[in-house]
Image (cartoon, rainbow, N blue to C red; front, side, top):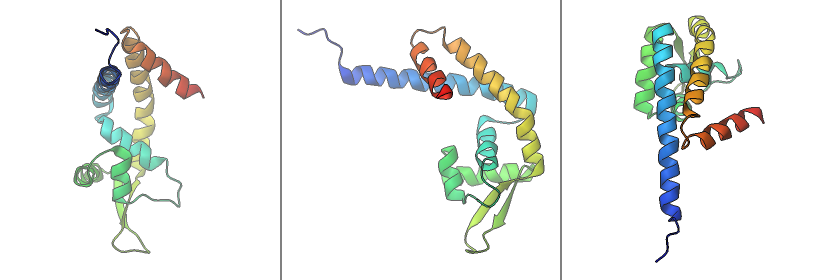
Length: 149
């Protein structure tokens, strides 16, 4: 009988570790952003994605949904909540009246600017804590390498 590890099982274990690492980091960041800025991780991600667009480039709702990894209906609800808070605004595409663009308002930019240091500190804290778990250490090291390339 062979005692060699099943590659499929090893891959599944690594995937579970990656998923657990992601969930732990997201939870840590969420608590910090919510406490300091009343902002969820999804809201922060959406502000970040939209703010990175060039002034003459807009994303349609379908593209926004893909960027923040949500369904279109969940993205629409998220955008509506953030629009109600004055953080985003939707505009009709001049070339295609069926198209709706979503842009960050000045209030949204200010909140993003204020929240980014909190996000970055929380991410660093979560990664430092994750490094203590031998299962997560190689994943943290890969993330850090990617960030410096």
